[in-house]
Amino acid sequence: MQSFLQQAVFGIQLGSLYALIAIGYTLVYGVLRLINFAHGDVFMVGAFVCYYACTRWLPFRDLSADPAGATTNIALAVVVLIITMAVCALLGVLIERFAYRPLRNGLRIADAHFWGLVAALPVAVRLGPFSHPGVLLAWLVIGVAFGYALRPVVAWIARRSVRATSRLNALITAIGVSFVLEYGGLLVVGADPNFVPTIVPERVYVLPGGVRVGTPQLAILAISLVLMLVLRYIVTYTRRGKAMRAIAHDIEAAKLMGIDTDRVISFTFALGGALAGAGGALVAALTHVKITPLFGLLPGIKAFVAAVLGGPGSIPGAVLGGLLMGLAEAFVAGSKASAFRDAIAFCILIVLLLVRPSGLLGRHVAEKV
View (cartoon, rainbow, N blue to C red):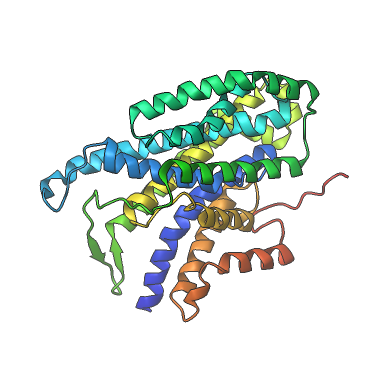
């Protein structure tokens, strides 16, 4: 029984992280009917932002040499979480603006500057590490120059392009954005694994039944719960949340009612990105796993399965699916079949698509053809 309860605690912790990522999939699918496969890489970016903030940007104290610095470190950890969520929210907005919006509204000449920055990335990497201000400035200058050079090309494409509403086009774009983030990360930070050192005090509490719960697990559960409640409030009670639900119901009717759909869609990507970034920061700072630019691939796939399990477009379903996914993985990891802990997600997906494709809390909607 003790082993069962211990694995359940671990599964709930893991499931809360999957739920944070799965909510991002659900939000985007709800408003655009789009599966944003780059979402797992936003989670990876959040982990790296946390790593650099904890090791280079902010003055965290070494707890082994200065135990009295715990209070300062906890305050700085909150700042790190806010910074990470803000950066990943901005990344989500940029992905929507320059990757997905042109599929709906067509290319604009101003988009050339963004793609100029992307094209200048390999050149800037050869100049030195991005942590050096001179290299960052050089990247911006070279990117702007590339952007001006690309303006005629973008203008030519914009005149001849047709707005693509096919889901296949959006899916291919999502996979492309994922590759850009992953291999752009390899260019910028390299392939060597990194990990965040201990920045907050870690204690272990023994619950009735001999179950051990550490402060990192409690922090992950508490922060995840708070973020989910805040999201619930935003979606249910704010004007922007009501606009999101209106677009999810009927985007054309929402436009006729005067809702700025592009702005609301960007806000949706920002929300999803912020939650994924928070998940990445929690994993990096509290579990001390090694992070690489490919770190978000597997958690992203598992969170996608969690979103499908709960029901695409259902926020409660994403939370439920994340928890069930975490529990299933934890119990498999604690059994004799621990080598298959990563395969359980794909087994669940196959069974679900055969038995209930709409998910546990999803609704089956007939599609007009």
